[in-house]
Picture 1 (cartoon, rainbow, N blue to C red):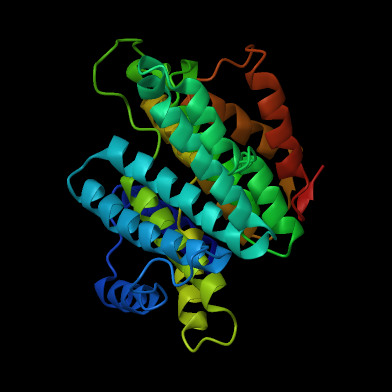
Picture 2: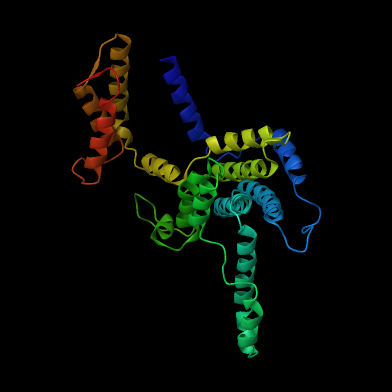
Length: 333
C-alpha cells in the first residue's frame, strides 16, 4: 500500500510540474562542456567531409537547439519550444544516420546538391540558365537523404541506439502533426474542447518542460554515439539521456490528460472518492475485489469524466479498461 501511495504521489507531482522547466544547471553545464570537446574547431579536416565529421557538426547544432529550447520555455513560448525540440530530434536522427549507416556522406552530398538547386531554381529560371544549372548539379548525384521513417529503420538495422525507435512515432510524428503541419489536428487546437469557442492563441498540446527534456536527451543520445564505449564520459552522456528521456511526456499523453481534466464533472467526485475508499478498505481487510466493484469504478469514472455510457466511442474503451482491471491478481470474477 505504501508503494502504491508513493506511486500516486509521484504521478500527481508530475501533473503539477508539467510546465516547469527542468533545473539541473551543474550537470547540464558539465555535459555541454564535454560534448563541445567532441566537435572539432574547424569544420572539415579533409577535402571530402566524412560521416563522423557530419555527425559531430550535427551535435553542435543539437547543443544550440538545446539552449534555444530552454530559452523559449523560460519565456513561456510553448509553440517555439515544441518546434525547436522537434528540430533537435530531427538533427539527432541525422547525426545517428551518419554514424551507423554506410555511405551516409554520399547521401548528404546529394541532399546538399538537391537543396541548393531548389534554392537557386527561381534565380536561374529568371536568368534563363535553368539548363546550365541542371548540368552543373548533375555531377553531384541525384540521391538525397531518405525520409525520417526510413532513416530510423536503417539506424536500427545497423545496430543503432536502442531508444531511437520511439523517437519517430512517439515524438517526431506527434509534434509534427500537432504543431508544424496545418492539418485538422493542428487547427483544432484553436477550439476549446467543451465550449467550442475559438481563440487566436492555440491550446497547448505538449508541455514546455517535456520539450526541454527531449532536447536535453538528444544531446546525450548523439554524444553517446559519437563518444563510443571507450570514452571516459560515455556513461555521463548515457545517464543524462536516459534521465531526461524517462521523464518526458509524449504529446498524445499530454493531450489526453488535458482533455480529461477539462471534462471532469466535479459533482461526481465525492462518489468516486467513496468508491475508492471502499475498495481500499476491502483490500486492507484481505477481502477479494469482485467484478461488481470493478464495474462500479468504471461507471463512476465515466460519470466523473462526463462520458456518455451509450456513446459508441466510450463503450469499447470502458470494456477494454474493465478487462484489464479484472485481469489484476486478487480480483474475483
